[in-house]
Figure 1 (cartoon, rainbow, N blue to C red):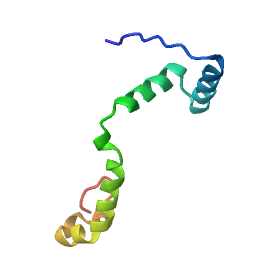
Figure 2 (cartoon, helix red, strand yellow; figure 1 turned 180 degrees about the horizontal axis):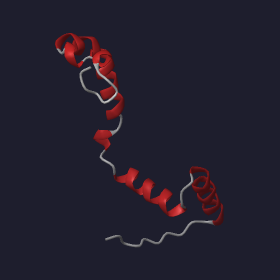
Figure 3 (cartoon, rainbow, N blue to C red; figure 1 turned 45 degrees about the vertical axis):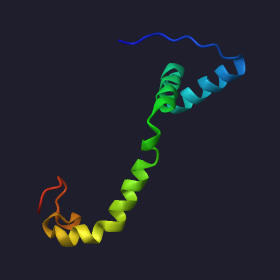
Length: 82
């Protein structure tokens, strides 16, 4: 169940929010909701995707050597061994 939250913003900020929402093809409510989610996100997750991508990139050769049948070059489009 969602709860309504009312905030007051000045005309200039509202115009900027509306402009940004239109540019992103969304609503002001959705834009503010996303910002609220970002504000309470666990800070330990910041940068986690980048760290994971770097780990995968740095260790791809070792993985391919350890699991040659799962090497990306040997998989078909569905991710199964060709």
